[in-house]
Image: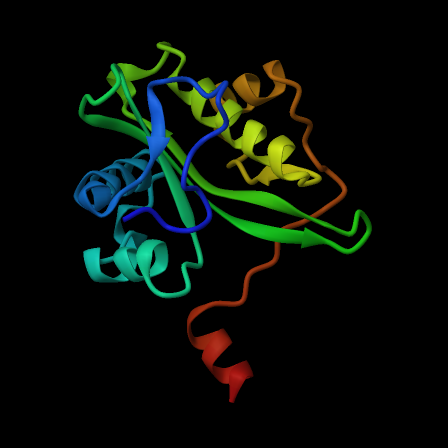
Length: 172
C-alpha cells in the first residue's frame, strides 16, 4: 500500500525514482545511518523500523519518501524523506526536504539530482510554492551541487531547535 500523498509520481519523473513502500523501510533506515555517519552524528540516528513505518504509512502519515535505484526495480541506493510545510506569505504548501542521501559509491550517477527534481516536479504539479532544506555549512560538495541547480542559501535566517531536556522543561 502506498501512502496517500504520493500514489504516483509525475509522468516526467526519472524511472529510477519511485515512492517508498513498507518493504523499503530497512533500506531507508540503513541509508539514514549512513547519512548520520557522513554528518558525523551516528549516535543521533535512533529511529526504529516501527517509528518509520508509523510516520510513513500510519493512518495519518506525517512524512513521505521517495527512493532511488540505479535501474528501475533495483535495490534502493538513495532516498529523499520530506513533509509539507506552509507559507503564510504565499498562502500555499511547500515541501521541506528532511533528508536526501545517495550511497557514496553511487554519487555522480544523477540519482541525487533525480530525487530533487522529482520533489520539484511534485511541488509544481501540486501548486506548492517552494522546496526547501537545510545543509551543514561544512558540506561544500552538497552546497555546490545545490547551487548548480539554482538553489540559494537563505543567509538571513538562522535555524533554531528546541529538543531534549530543554524541550521537556519548556513543555511542562
